[in-house]
Amino acid sequence: MSDTPVLHVRDVRKRFGGHAALDGVSLDVHEGEVVTVIGPSGSGKSTLVRCVHQLESIDGGAMYLDGELLGYERHRGHLRPLPDRKVAAQRSRMGMVFQQFNLFGHWSVLRNVVEAQVAVHGRDPGQARAEALRLLERVGLAGKADAHPRMLSGGQQQRVAIARALATNPRIMLFDEPTSALDPELVDEVLSVVRDLARGGMTMIIVTHEMSFAREVADRCVFMEDGRVAATGTPKEIFDAPSSPRLRSFLSRFT
Ligand code: ADP
Ligand code: MG
Image (cartoon, rainbow, N blue to C red; front, side, top):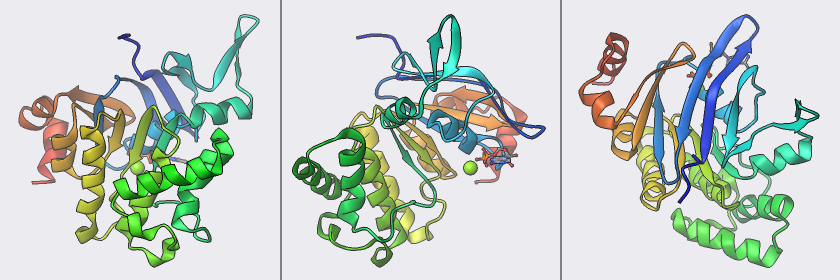
């Protein structure tokens, strides 16, 4: 087994105007590891996962997926941005789940889960369909293949979004507050799908405001503040023995 982390983030910086949304963030995620990311609103959690998924460019530092530099290639001793098609290929090795599901509303549930497999990976349509049905069953939506997203609850839509993200066999799953847009009674059905993925050995980064979940599902937890990793440790270290006063004060809001 190699020691190369699935994801290696080194000193990443991202500015919006004069504001440093990420101010030198480093993070490794190893095979099968679940890292949860907590922190106050505006601390850079979404920016971090969006940069990893290359929805945002970075202003400094570097990111590697399975040891491969993300977004850039070496050319005559310099780094130059990768062409779009190579960026798309790198992005397709990660699955991202957003707060707002982002399903295609005019497509059936099944087509939402089939399409990326065919379009991005060139998978045979019949095979893609079989895989989609298997994944819909895995997220508890076996009977909903022909439904349209608008007919589903938010929790069901988010589970479709998870199935869609899984359909391309990602090396890592990135979740950005997957339950924040849901009515409270729908949160658990989504968390239990994410929990099953964790048990199944999926490598994941999960940004969440659900503190008990962040603790329970994590191998390691990262506390972000002001665009930096302000604390990192096992769930026990972060939640039972928070080292910094600001982490303590953040956690106290949830009890
Ligand atoms: P979090 O997800 O932890 O709430 P974000 O990563 O969304 O934090 O935001 C970090 C900081 O970057 C915030 O100050 C936010 O206002 C700013 N920011 C995020 N996205 C943009 C953007 N597209 N344009 C300008 N500022 C942004
Ligand atoms: Mg956010």
